[in-house]
Length: 132
Image 1: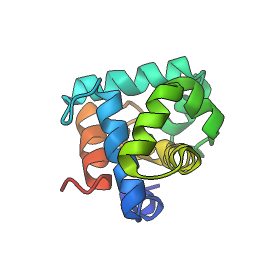
Image 2 (image 1 turned 60 degrees about the horizontal axis):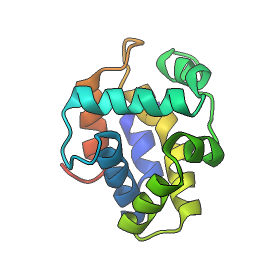
Image 3 (image 1 turned 90 degrees about the horizontal axis):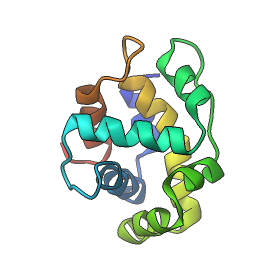
Image 4 (image 1 turned 120 degrees about the vertical axis):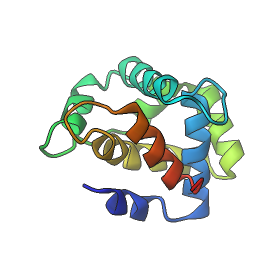
């Protein structure tokens, strides 16, 4: 999977707003979090949601295991999902579908050597959120 494949998944303005709001949540409320903070937030979310096995598949060169909206909800919590949805102007279901549908590809693109690259993660998320 490459960036253009992920961009297709985030082609609507609402989906871009979901990604932008997710960046703020992963970066602990910062609008432009540092790459290391963003990567740490992502790792914390994955661990909290019990998605470690899926993360391994996203980092490897094989197929990306999918995740469910329920896993995202467990990882981020109801309050965070509500914040992201309100900020993006979409339903919670749309938010969960956007995040669960794009996160595997985002991590795949941001880990070209089998390790999550914080700079690549930030760059990928910025591009998807329409920041660049």
